[in-house]
Amino acid sequence: MNARFVHDGKAIDYTPGSDVAAGQVVVLGSLVAIAKIDIPAGRTGALHTVGVYDIAKATGTGTGIAIGADVYWDEAEAVAKTDDESGANKYLGKTVAAAGDDDATVRVRLSQ
View: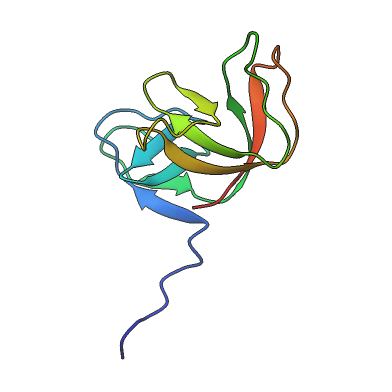
C-alpha cells in the first residue's frame, strides 16, 4: 500500500500555540486556512481549507478587486490583496464577487 485515505481535506486538524478566533485566517507554510469556530490554545480544532468566505480587504482608492481575480493573504496587514508581493503573501483563491474600493471585504473561494 502506498497511500491510505484519511479524510476529504475540507478541514484539517490544528493545535494552535495561542487562541485562534472564529474567522481568523491561519497561514501554515504556503497553506492558508480559516478557523470556523474558536480554537483555544493547546486544543485541537479544525481549520477549513475550502469554502467561500468574505475576507477582509483594504479600503480606499485603487483597492477594488474584480470578480475572478487571484487573491493572496497579506499576513502582516491581515487583508486579502491581488498582489503576492514577490511571494510574501500566500495564495487564498479566486474572488466570486467583485469588491469596490469602499468594500471592507471581498468574497473568495478558497483553493489551495
